[in-house]
Length: 124
Image 1 (cartoon, rainbow, N blue to C red):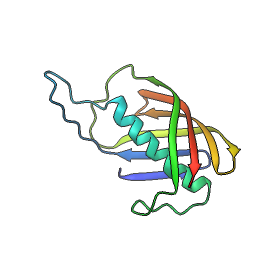
Image 2 (cartoon, rainbow, N blue to C red):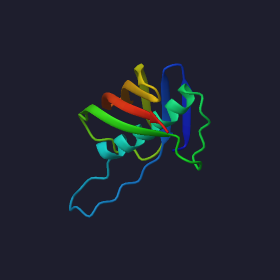
Image 3 (cartoon, rainbow, N blue to C red):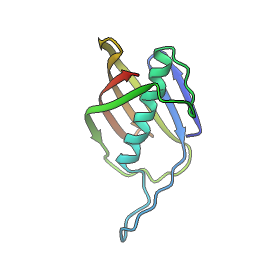
Image 4 (cartoon, helix red, strand yellow):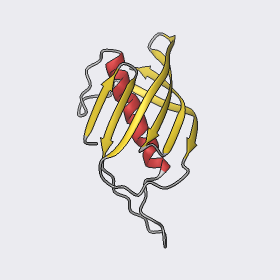
């Protein structure tokens, strides 16, 4: 990840990627799994900001993020390797119990791949 930008109800990440596989004739492309990993980190960073918690990438874990009910649309491959844009727009955040939140969001990667869904956030 090169850069995070957070505002009102969104977080945007610019990142580079590398992809390696042992599969024969497999193209070098962004996979939906790498998008999901990146998205989980984006939710983690966004919720630090939302809850006014100090984010330290090398610090101890303050939150747990459990994605659920995800919908992925990948109509074509993303072959770009540098300066990939991943934008997450938060639709809602609901406190469901003390120190537990449900986040609903829609994300896009380079205006090609979309991931929508919900995640449970637990403040440790």
